[in-house]
Image 1 (cartoon, rainbow, N blue to C red):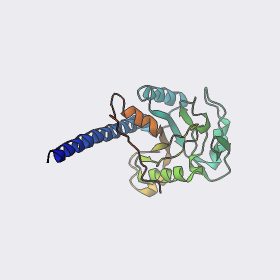
Image 2: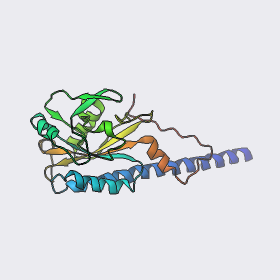
Image 3: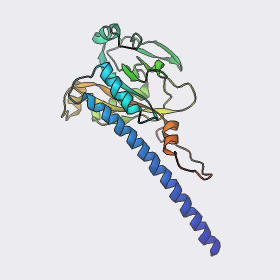
Length: 231
């Protein structure tokens, strides 16, 4: 009887500690999504901010959220607009070119197609160089998240992916907030016709997990994150 009581006590303490860590991790993710929403406010008047304004606001957000890998603007670029975009130069950034991944760590020029969703604004650039110009729709997982966010009008995250700028083994995920030409896009058809692009948050899963554990002790508990979206 005493053994059973002690066992139940240990189980209760264990579950309490695990639930505390899960709650903290959930809060950390929510906080980062709210930071992404605050950047999306720049686009609330249906006009795209210039690069310097975006960079300033993104740097301000990143200074308070160390576990965000990058903040980006992903415009919808039709092929008829590609040449104009690739001929522009942005201050402190190299020549813009729409690219896609050949293999991890190697990029090639994106082939011609009707639409592109490239990384056009990116902060910080240092450490994320390979992502600049990357056409997210050239990858099936990212493209599905684009379609889901566009059609629903809701923030959408990918499952775990390998970031194009990843140099180690850590997995990451992307969070998309769709931006439209005007507010009140109430139907899927209207959303598709009036999409401007996406404000994007880039996250490394391990960084968020470690940030959520700051000031906490695991007390010999081993935790594993499982991605239910993976087969």
